[in-house]
Length: 63
Image (cartoon, rainbow, N blue to C red; front, side, top):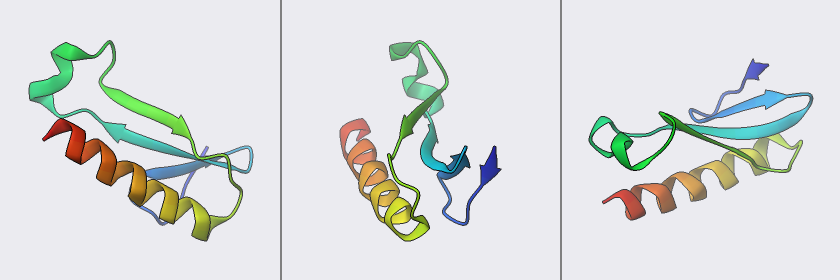
């Protein structure tokens, strides 16, 4: 596993993943303390864009 330059992504076997910790006040609604999701890309630039879009959606949903 290798962490990338983007704040919420890491690379595993060449594929980028999103990892976002769930805020403490919302953890009782989830089974785990973080969300991990495959971004299905090997491109660092595309992964960063997809990660920021996904984080924005999560933030809006949690708000």
